[in-house]
Image: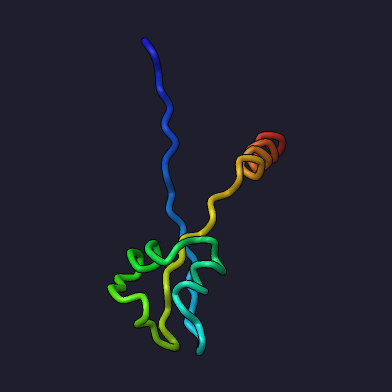
Length: 79
């Protein structure tokens, strides 16, 4: 028998409030994502139609393998 382990995918988000002069492209660039992803997450059909004060859901960056390993090592060492 072979056992397989699967990693659960946990989606995490941060939120950003649109300021005067922001574009979906500039926001996507700032957070390391793309316009299409922001449109999908926020139900936006026209990337030119965002408004000041609008709160956008932004995908949080996944932790690096090094950070995950360091966290696991610290947790193991603490117990």
